[in-house]
Amino acid sequence: AQTVTQSQPEMSVQEAETVTLSCTYDTSESDYYLFWYKQPPSRQMILVIRQEAYKQQNATENRFSVNFQKAAKSFSLKISDSQLGDAAMYFCAYRSMEGSQGNLIFGKGTKLSVKP
Amino acid sequence: NAGVTQTPKFRVLKTGQSMTLLCAQDMNHEYMYWYRQDPGMGLRLIHYSVGEGTTAKGEVPDGYNVSKKKKQNFLLGLESAAPSQTSVYFCASRVQGGSTEAFFGQGTRLTVV
Image 1 (cartoon, helix red, strand yellow):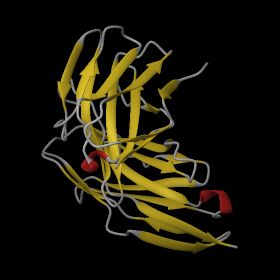
Image 2 (cartoon, chains in turn green, red):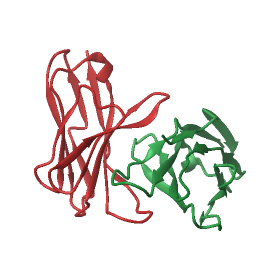
Image 3 (cartoon, chains in turn brown, cyan):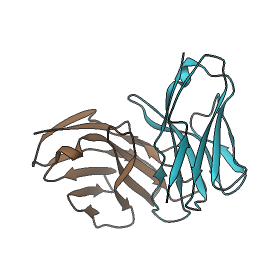
Image 4 (cartoon, helix red, strand yellow):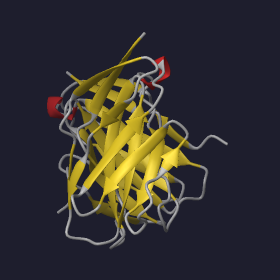
């Protein structure tokens, strides 16, 4: 079974600075998808960025980018120019390409605080 | 476009009571999921559904049942609520195929006393 590990329960960053959230996963599959979701205090789950494992190029969405290291099974999220609105729980998630289930497997989350 | 709507948003139950959580999506998605979120645990899959009428168990199905009579509605039932079922429940849906995004409802905070 696949597992996702986020080793940083909490992180803090100064406004306008850069922060990196770590995520590692365990799988025997060669093709899969990886996601970062943001959960602000409103509780809504918001997709931040996604990565297809067959793509070598790291995904980027504005101030958010990932460092995808397939051999190391690592998928970290970098937030540049941090803003107060980035304060939230961040969840790393894995989804298999195989089978009909297609559900997300989540890490336990990292709570990000942004200091003004 | 409403997306994924969960009803209710909050609920307090007494131990042994039953209730049904409703999830409705208007995006014609084939896949629907029920997760629970507990502090320090992330989100864990309870049950899921593919298409109309097909449901299956996820990681933590005990104490829950589901119903999927229409493609757009996915019901999660608690027959006899227990304090261990105090949690935030999320419904999600997505279209079939590719790295498609899962869309989440706003969550239901359930407290069992």
